[in-house]
Image 1 (cartoon, rainbow, N blue to C red):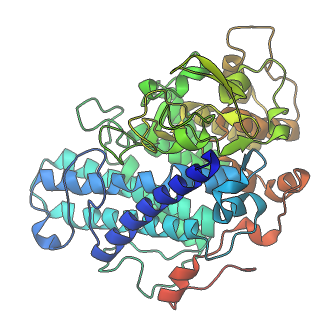
Image 2 (cartoon, rainbow, N blue to C red):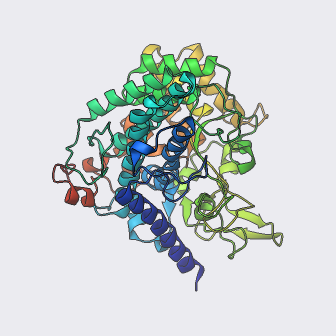
Image 3 (cartoon, rainbow, N blue to C red):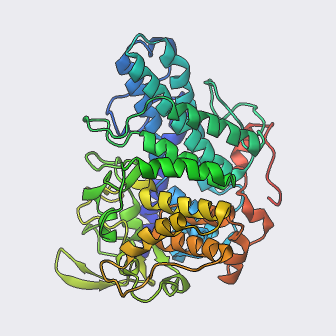
Length: 494
């Protein structure tokens, strides 16, 4: 079988596996269907009244909420947020349903939408069950508050993903017997954001720790994670004063710092490190717990050596957008790589590849060790700089925040690019932050949302020659969901 067709067949197998787990969980409303990252115990919400008796039950139920993050992020978020931008491309052999995100030719029947929507509401239903039932458990009050706070954080984060993708969506805050196949109409996006902010504020008041250290707790939401997502939600809502407030709390906590070397952000050995605030957790301790991103992004190596796929490539114009000498370019984008199995130099098949998700020691195909970083400290610094500029123009604090990111990008060479910014107008600083976010956070699930938030989505895609229209500001409600829920309406243009 030719490599590209072998890759396609495995991509379809991976998507099928993910969809099967999601659909099985949807039908049975299983709290621990497929796999559970943090605690490897099965958990079922069938017979719910008998499932919430002890503190251990609360922990297992919460782990089931975290479990869904792996299906919402990873390559699903890459396709939704990065492929649908000017930064990333994909080879034609991956199939039309993926290629459609690059060309904005997707329809409401695209299976990625239905999988994303279903998994989001499965997570929300699991969170709702924790929020409803844990208060009745006789357990330590502090631990109880933290479990409920984490569940509200995860519910808020998931609604944030939904509202950015689809706009108005059903608001469900109590358990249902069938989480998607019910007649619940869409709720206005403004009301969804109100719920998101209320949940995050509740989580912020729940006494979540600054850091987890005990076995089985690494990767849980911390107080810094809650404040960071609150800052991002407020930034999306153009509430810059509150963005500054919460981003500053994260910065002033001194709980996080930039890795000194940009390349140290990404190796699996460094996951959950000093810069990582909150990530979707992947592990290849067991088959199907791991991440597929290394395979999809890496320069192709013949199977089974190092599991490369190389189906996603960097747009040439984006490669050329980096300033000469920016160290992030050589870390992020490669055209050649040495195969460690035989020390031979291998070249990219279809243009420059993304090297952020390289894992030299995957357990199996689609089972690498990489986490998916949902938010990291550099993101908070750039949000802080952006929000200060919108309130007061480019103040010294705004320059300091963005220049911390640019300083690291010089990798110790004071004369290299990018040089520190100074003397910009408010409009120039605004554009500089958006560009900096592109260079710093590329291929981490942010670009579409950044372009939408700043009003630059249509103009940026048009400049890159990508077909785009007003309807593409929102994704379509999945047609399958409309078919089973007559109360749903479709977004304009679909």
